[in-house]
Length: 290
Image (tube, rainbow, N blue to C red; front, side, top):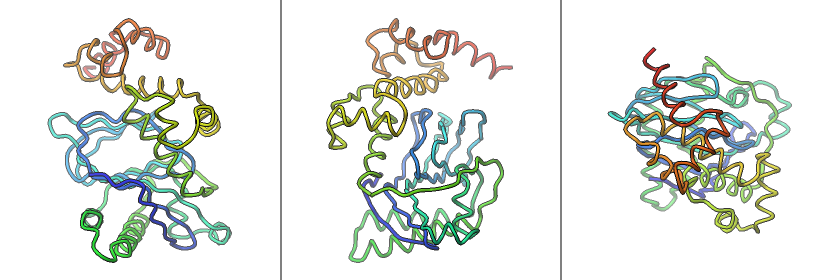
């Protein structure tokens, strides 16, 4: 269940929030390592199941009731427990504090935004708010956007109230972007996250309504990578996740990633990680068993 292009905006304490996507899904497949662009925050609430959240240098065990926030440039990867996969509510949003809010100093919401990563837990009120939000989106009764705004304001305030910093990376100076631009970056991130197997530059350009050259320039400017570099990085992150599953053969993983042969996959993987997929899997198994 996924609702995109919502473009639902409201302000709290002179800080503008634009909600672009809300979803509820069971994470059967790994969500490979990825990060979000500037001003972007993703709130994850796991209502059921177990798994692991991997950051570039740290891992966290996920259990029912886990809440975590991934902000700008925070690379993260989610792996479900195959026996009891995670079911997750996810809210993707852009944030723009006003000059007045920034000059005003500390506040409930501004303090929340100063940290681009947080991992913890929450009470049942967050789950209830998410269930009500999905219900309003599904039914679309008269006035539902007004109700949605009220629910999402409560959602953000409740999170900010319970915000306790355990391990965080400080991020300051949030700047806003036009909603059309926000949607473009959401489309780009989802394209590489879910369609790394067969996404093409032409297809991506068509999705965001730009030409091939404009799309390449946008990727270079915003992510400092070419289309091919971005696609390769997405494939390699997915490869690392898939290699953890020893029931999958190297050839099936190569096929899942869109490579024409195991040799092409192995060459690309070795170029990125300086070892073959088989060696990576063997090292991973040794680390886990040790």
